[in-house]
Length: 195
Image 1 (cartoon, rainbow, N blue to C red):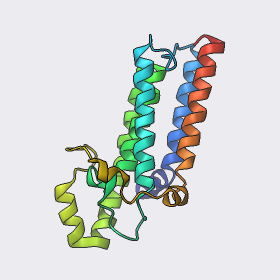
Image 2 (image 1 turned 30 degrees about the vertical axis):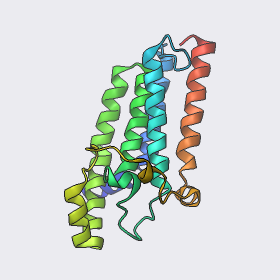
Image 3 (image 1 turned 90 degrees about the vertical axis):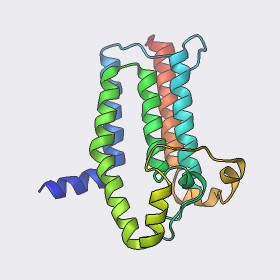
Image 4 (image 1 turned 90 degrees about the horizontal axis):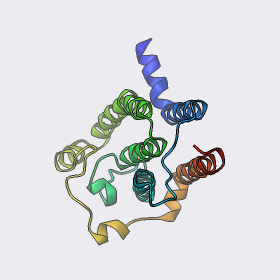
């Protein structure tokens, strides 16, 4: 039973995360929570939130434009910096929206979701990669951290091997569109509802 629930959480992680975020924002609207304005430079936390969202989207896009899922072990581009750049990008996006909404409950909820859903997903993926790529995976795992970058990329790493076609195949446009719509909605709420 617990394993079945875990499997559902892992498979539906994106939908669950989106639903929780929507509920958190709806609660903030209901409670008339004031958001940090990310379009006004006099609100530095709003700008920090926007930069985190953009950094997360950039990292996810970079990773999605390089990875060929389950075909080969990807160790280039963002994968030369962290083993799970897509998840790190998602966390940065969530952290950015939490900073914009300025609600401590949102930070707590996002941290719990990351730990409860993405932690097991990372564990499962790493077991799978270990089976598929054995010794290559072990070497890679020793040299690159799971989530926290220990070095920054150079210019060549950033541009090499990126493909817009792979970006489209991996449907990364969904993350960009969703984040853009959320930013527009938050901006409209801030300007028209005074939040």
